[in-house]
Image (tube, rainbow, N blue to C red; front, top):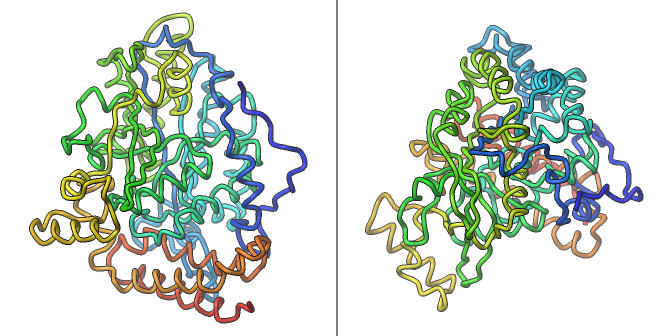
Length: 502
């Protein structure tokens, strides 16, 4: 069954409200749009499963943070700062970055118009989408609207959801995880429309980060499912089999079932596609997933024979290979395989939801997928009987493991193992948690009494600063200008909350 168009009775969403991005106020309407079980790609795909020997799925991640560095300290996009300070560092690349944010809106139509059958998944942070509007870059936004809204190109492009302000999930206060997810959905709908949002079923986590604390992971997956997501992209080394061993090689090329158990023994699960390890930008820029897929074949899952799929994601603009080699290597592949999966058998490009819908239409059930969990969780459940789990028992087990093994941690795992989003950033994390606590202390009871409170201007402003402070960039570049930005955002958020009238 095809995804039905959202109700015409839904209110029109303005992209900007009071000069700020539209990130809250219509939570019930957004829920009604995203929570459906209709197929998204299956009715439109031109691929036949029996003509696919193997597949590859590539995603591009795009992000620029919001910083208080404009005229008089205004909130601006870092891309705007790059344009205005071209002599600093690598800022001379600003226009190239802007082109990278726009170019898929040219590449995909050109390929389709030449009879090719391309596929690409796109992940744009809320910060960046807002920043493009602030900069007046209608050229970029219109190119993206072509991919999101034109039915002619919808079968070829899949938009992935993410955290609105590129927040690392494991260090995001649990009550804010769902707020980040919802903020992105509402902002996306305000730009591209409800119908486009109804087709967003895969989730791309910032920094490819997966929390491994049982309660955080459980709440994360719960929030994703409540927000209508069907699958999650995860990094290979951020997960393990239920016995603690690494993933089997073939297992990386089929959907997996990510299981989360919280400290009360409750379980929840979501489908996961595995991003394999490697130099992300180089692999995608040179279309390595396609070349790897040529060496792969079919597998049996749930008694059904299905094609393997190589999944990879990379920054869409960052580094010389993405700026220069990707345009050179992306387009020829699609000419080479234009009839595969249609009139001839061979390797094809796929989008994540398309792949999952194709194999599930062939009789595979999500219950058939191999089960995985977040890395290091097996050690907790070795110490704690899940049927007797309690928050106290789990925290005691975590404390014991940390004491006996300095490598054990509950900081989660991301695209790199040599970078912590926690250590050395206490001067950011402390204020971040304080602002979140103050936000919820001010508003949670008010929203519970009257959900329309989320449409108030003071709520919108306070939420914006709360979400912005959680941006990963403030904990990436070390101490200095970026941590100073974080402190300024905290100061402004605190000032907004101080003026809230209950």
